[in-house]
Length: 487
Image (cartoon, rainbow, N blue to C red; front, side, top):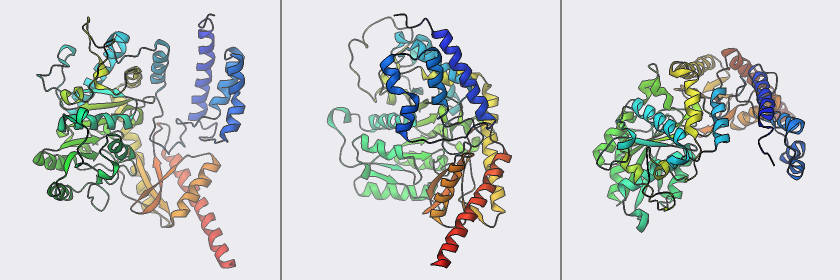
């Protein structure tokens, strides 16, 4: 059987349909979100029949792709305002295609020299932006050198796990063989991503030993409160393995005071990890770079390319100030892979939980290189400024309020003052299919939440959404009032 004879023909059919999909999304010719029952979708796509007949080529492939794309959430749509996932640059998507065809599992250098070279370059590019020392490939694993290092992982959750494994290795070098002592704790921001508490559980420290750091009135880490908390925990006999800072938080997009937190952590010799999964690109911007002041003083960073860098999922960077802490995080024995051999590069395997790892650096590089750093920064500044413009408009409305002034492209606000009303509004907005928004809990209230991710979203789209929310919210509130009067 010749598996490849129809590749070019099929690829042309699929790319043509993807081009139409992008055009329809950008110009709002189709709904941003359609949700059908899962069993109905399975039936429509003919999954069982295709597996039985093995016919996914030609017209059969076209029909399948049409059905699939017709039920995809359209991230390039101006109304996509819900989740922190990139509206990808199409050239970056070609990187995913190239990687899928070549299938170079590049955690071992000889299994993907080109992919390894690109990952090595992109890691050093990010390290240089942080202000850390880089090194060439020959010096990369030198145990006498304290240069920075890093790796790419499949997502920020795995990235946070990898970074805290490095922290564990640095603080508890015997834990791999002896297990975790029962007095270990980790401190995370009040508004931290759920993956951090999950990571603490996975590491065997115990989720109950993941403590929220004392915060200011907006939810940012309070450095004085952090120091007091450290003193109290130490007096109780606790060993603080790591402190985590947000750059920025997931719910409302606030940046923690990294410089002040670094002062505290250096004073007590505690590992400081920065979760910059979403907000890392601020570092590239002269206008917003101050939000990450002090970043060069942290011990580890997670920075997702598949959020604000228009890169296809998944691609997250784990960066450490001293490469040895990451190199020692995993104790790997695999005689069929790791042995004396000609090695013009080095094996990323020792820095990863994954053995078989996709060439995710390719999609990252192609996404950035297709537009250039200046245009990437322009996109970041555009969506951040749009969030601020939206906040300014909402402040002038008597029936709406914002949660906190936005620092990035994330904005939380309310219509009226009832938690259930926000959920009801979202339900109706999604039913109309013009916009896709989310909600979040913040300061013990439920808020509507916008995450402006598409470069195609402009003020006129946001204004239309806000007026729709006022119309929908007013109708729902009026119905509730009338129902109460009747009862």
